[in-house]
Length: 358
Image (cartoon, rainbow, N blue to C red; front, top):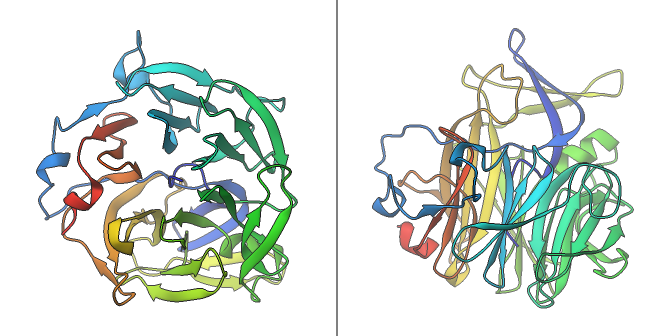
């Protein structure tokens, strides 16, 4: 599974600058991080010119993507979700686009609101979570042909595979995480209880975020708007731990008399938004958090992206000094970094992700 793009299901955000209140009124996509200047040095491997960008033959680089939503890798191919154009580009090992999957629409193999990608780590199929269709489109292992649609009985935010098992994030019957049948969408079991999510809006808020599946059998959940990371056993469903994210500026949540919800954005510098989580060798996790601009009317205007490391040794989250771009996927010896300036792009850096971190 990869993480984490324009696309995970989250609550649509409108920040009212005058009052400093964020009112969440609908379901919408999650943000794409935008890295900005930092006092920390950029690792040489991610400096200017490092690696290569994915390209579309015959098109200029600035028109390769409308908005990068997610990246998944499998069988030597790279799949990029373009959330703006509602399509998926299939790229060769050399970085050239060889096919396009999907188009806007409600029909088979078409997309209405694609938000996340996952590759079956056993069967090799490509799974595309579409929040507006409340289901998952399945393409064959080569990523060339649509096979079927898996309907879900709950709104979902993210998905990942672990040893051929499909795990989905979403609020359902008081739980946040669910093992789902990859054949027909049946919920096989649920874990991560969330007794505080009886209100539908609150349930959506608490179930919004990003999943990571690690080969060790651990699943990590990074909420979009809560300053913590939750880790679970995929096999038993028990909670390993909840780790607070230091320096995280969280919103304050309250329910209105009319039944809606309001989020107070404290301070003058906006608030934070969980943006990416990836497993690292040895059981650690890379966590990335974006800072939204105060008064922004867009969920995609990050002032900065900060990186953290969650230690498997003591379960603590610690900030990392290197300034990294938003990382949406990583192979054994490759890093897929999303760039938003001067235009949306995906850069492949031929370096193991762990080598970039202290």
